[in-house]
Length: 351
Ligand SMILES: NC(=O)C1=CN([C@@H]2O[C@H](COP(=O)(O)OP(=O)(O)OC[C@H]3O[C@@H](n4cnc5c(N)ncnc54)[C@H](OP(=O)(O)O)[C@@H]3O)[C@@H](O)[C@H]2O)C=CC1
Ligand SMILES: [Mg+2]
Image 1 (cartoon, rainbow, N blue to C red):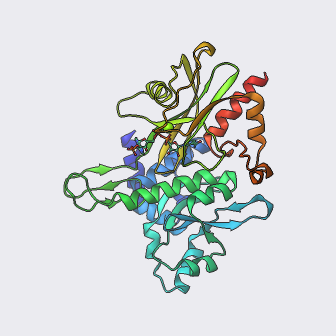
Image 2 (image 1 turned 45 degrees about the horizontal axis):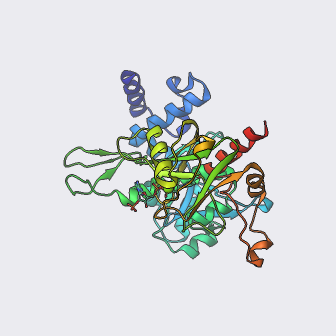
Image 3 (image 1 turned 180 degrees about the vertical axis):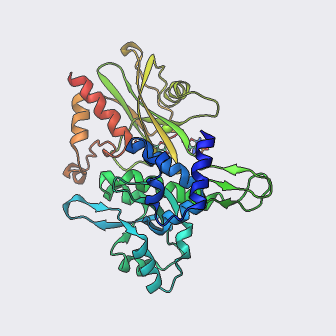
């Protein structure tokens, strides 16, 4: 396989490459299914700075300002995170008296269905108000953007912000203390003094919805917005398996011993830093379902019936009761994997 890639890269270095389409049309990339071709194309861009540079010249850019994504209003659908053509970004940078070299600081984030190579660019060195005006949008802090954005735009925005932030916070080699240099795609950083290569990192976190057969357990931390309850979550300790983390976190946080668990899905989560949320259902026996809350970590934890959960899922925004002093229970939005777990549990109860 390494030989195949070397051949492909040497072809690239000897032939003019006017656009990323040339590379995408290469027999080694073209011969496969569309998904395989896309993945191979992205791999080449990560390994070859020149190829990536050329793809940047005709790519599409998701914009950030000090890690806040640019949002545009999209009628009734909420807000979108638009991608701008390289030529448009360069034109606006020119109007603002900024060199377009800044495009080189962008990071590779994907390849779209419309055959566009996608990059994320942080324009934090420029005045935000000027950018808002020229790009016809608003830079919004990520936590707020999460509640505003169309569901389909969230994964790319999360991934982009995580990669941009990783570069901002990993500029030095932890062994030599010297500055590291990034490759053009931004998929790694290298310390030239000792050859250490650093790759973007995520912390694995398990999130488990515990059930005793007829009820499910949700909890809240003091820092959560009023009335919000979620599934139990916790960072994996080094050396732990997912199963061990679920078992430990449930024991630590609510004093229960789980009997079984099964994996259901995962999600990249950028708060407070890049995490890989690994979602599981877990069960405890109804006879051993007495909760003892760890009040260092949780403010409350309770068992909820299916009817209570259905009402919480239906609650789109905080209703009037709150004004009357009653705080209604609500759960994370559909864009959070906690919601998927809760929805799956309800679907199972209904069967
Ligand atoms: N997407 C979703 O649906 C949901 C996502 N989440 C996310 O799950 C994550 C974990 O939940 P939480 O209950 O807070 O986790 P934990 O129960 O593990 O408690 C958090 C504490 O763990 C310690 N810790 C250990 N490793 C790390 C690490 N790599 N990064 C940060 N802290 C670490 C810190 O303690 P100390 O500061 O004392 O060192 C921190 O305060 C949160 O980031 C939260 O945003 C939670 C619910 C739903
Ligand atoms: Mg926790």
